[in-house]
Image (cartoon, rainbow, N blue to C red):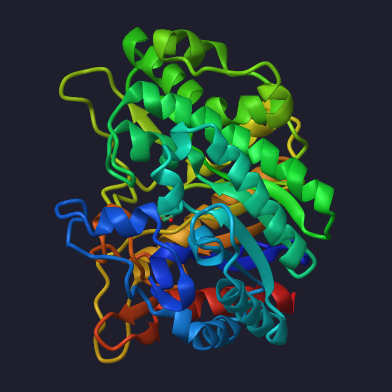
Length: 440
Ligand code: FCB
């Protein structure tokens, strides 16, 4: 694959990270603990025993990291704010020293002419709120709206976009459905109720931020996939339809249509969420952009053991199928089903078993992955889907949740002993690709 895709000149090229995965500074300057601090310090939860205590030490090395971004010629940086850094308990007092960190980070980005794209919630709920029931407690949605408005008030005119949530599917299904993520609960009914409170919190936060008024475009980031039946059997087709309904439509329909999708709602039966009278009115707020994170499709097999896909491009180091055409299919499908605002691809990238050899990281596989996904993205755009930017996940190797530091997603290699950053071949490729786009 080598043919250069020509994107519109206004297209935004970025990189993405999240607070818990890179910042470290877990207790610095008054930061309160989050559910991920608690989870990572609970033995047995993280594959390699990793924590977020130091991570990439970005809390202290942010200036170096912004310089690194500038050296890669990116237009934009997507990062998240650690709620418990700026409001240690998740309600009540603000922590000025925490806000000061993000103020310094924004200052560096401004100095380098890099757009800031902020996510308010990338899974790190303040532990203080977890102690009061976390996302199972409806009040958490109200606290979230207060936090959102405060960020919009302070930073709304300095950032391009503010996303309420990153991948609420994960917060609900991995945090409360199968216990892989913090807070580590495995209870289907709870996970579905949590998904409703996350959606409600999105809607309340949108309204609270709108009331503040700022130049930032406001939206949400969802992880999405197409769901393909493994075979033509009725069982596989039913499974695929349910998977798409419970995962993609479950979050899209309330926001765009003010209701849950019938198929999943029926299937959830007694596990369906408790919904109050005005909830859908609150949730169905117009959004200025939709962030779409795409990594793989769902390959749905009802057989035991389930059939596996046989992808020509293979699997990533996470074991995720590499399926670029799923991105085209997904975007076309969404575009046909909803009145979409402009889309940002807020995450796409791969874990690779990278090796640092003689000062270089030859990650040809990652370059191939990105090239194929950009081609798939371009195809959807040519077919009429309005996409305005692409953010590679991730700038840095970082803490990959329950996989700890064992999986490397960065286009920049991080030596966790020394904190030395080394751009991988993919980073240099991305820089040259961005230059080539601009040179046209
Ligand atoms: C997404 C998350 C991000 C990162 C990538 C690999 O689900 O948003 O933090 O872990 O997967």
